Length: 607
Image (tube, rainbow, N blue to C red; front, side, top):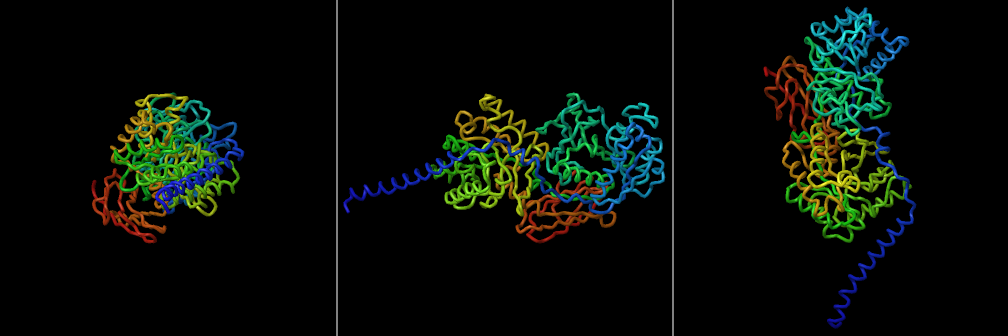
């Protein structure tokens, strides 16, 4: 064969391959184009109806609880005095579900109720003298208190007294009824004694009622807007406390500014309320309560930078170069048909952090027939696996349109997590039960780059960076996950890179935040769910913590946080103690092997 013929063949073979690939892509895209596009909807509407797999809301041990049905309070609800009976019965049912031994008692019985460890006095604006005295004497009798609503603002005859008793009990500097709102939201940040096992930034949806707001620094939950931003009463800053803990005359107090029955009837609300009930009883009743902190290695929050690499695919390299220079990993959700045409760049994305899928051709998933979704997601998984050498774990549905069939199809294709909207119901990953399997849902809260600088909100780079910074600060304070979602055709463009680089440097400079790929974050959340912790007092000054790893993988860097009843601090332990506030012990466990348990003894002493 002549050199000329060999040269012709050398060019002809790759040319034929390119032509074949091009024809395949054209056929695939043509097939997608012929498919009817489903009606548009947000994946939020799907997540809204789904439960999340949260921790067991059972108390660690039995607690005796008395729910007080005050006769004077019943008269407040005339001409429907049975309203208070329904309120107290709801508390009885919630407490029994938590594992407490519960009695409903009248105000005439409360003076002789010395056996109860916790008194619950719900929604009692008018208060008898006997119940007021029981509140005053609770600390001396070794009892804790759970109070809700406008407790004690009127006397036994329902004559107005004001908020004096509530101010004394909670330590609030100001108390106001919440003004009329079309919907009421309460958001629970992580970190307080009433937030154990509740996902960071969990939002409760309430029906408007007679809710009360407090102004005080130690708020365990705040009234918020739908997107979790604080929304104080009458627009007043910091007048937004919805849940608080305090100590009143020696009694531990958990105060709620709303009532159990106010919650909208959804699985998520019920699950979060069950944990809040358990935590309130454990705090008031001085029970040791252990939980796994949201993030590993003493980090208070997490962050991820996730790019949808779609239109103007090659722009993605500019953002990847910037993140690499700053020293943080990125996640790149690739449209796999485009990735096949940009193989070298796609493999570089994989080296710089992580590659996930944005489907094969960016057409909508949710609303399509389930079998068609299975075929499409299996195709994009196969294409990307061939490209990067291993299965990809993450899916970012185009335009955040997905349904349960999408989740099921992605699990069937070998995926493990999805990133999308979750109705802003928390700023933490969730484990969603899909058939007999589980999917990790990573939430996108706040704006993406289209929301910040798209056609409807054109802004300069400085304004965009400041907006993302403020959203990052909000999520960080709640102890959650802040995920910046941006696109190759917008924030990754060279002219907008200064905004991306600026926020990336802010986040990277915060050593309390874990910056990771979305796959690493999803993997951690799944492993964290396999850890189960308990705590118990052994004698007067020893606390014993037990941690079990029920999973199939080792877990590294977990921090166990324990609320304990003693005023003493941890002075030594056969584990790595971390700094903590009084009444809290934090222990870092470098590694716990799959299927094993570890017991840590902690000695308490003077602070």
